[in-house]
Length: 108
Image 1: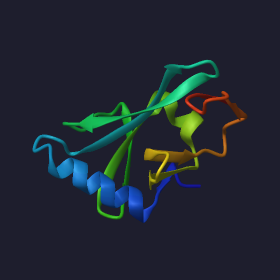
Image 2: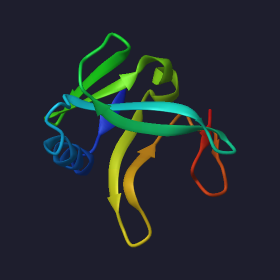
Image 3: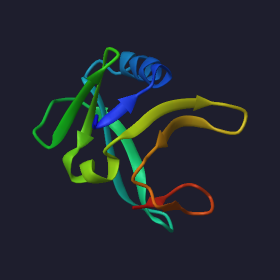
Image 4: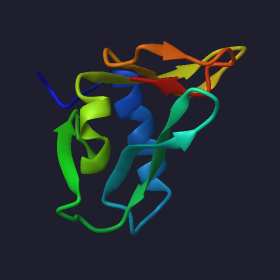
């Protein structure tokens, strides 16, 4: 099983945001305590590689997965959504057991 799967749309968007930051070598994906269900996804720039992250290279992009969040994210699909009602990364996570009513947080 792959750590995470990156869709073509997500990879295209990642390339675009990395082009705007000369210092970034990739993006970081993790989780943090958030919302009423307990966990939320975090996405940020990575400016230097570290052993704190599991590197996923796919479709020409580098996504560094926070090792502390690895068990929560294993097998997650990272997609990009740009619709009338939502714009941003969309995560389909097989580990989720439920989400809060507004969809901002999840629990495993």
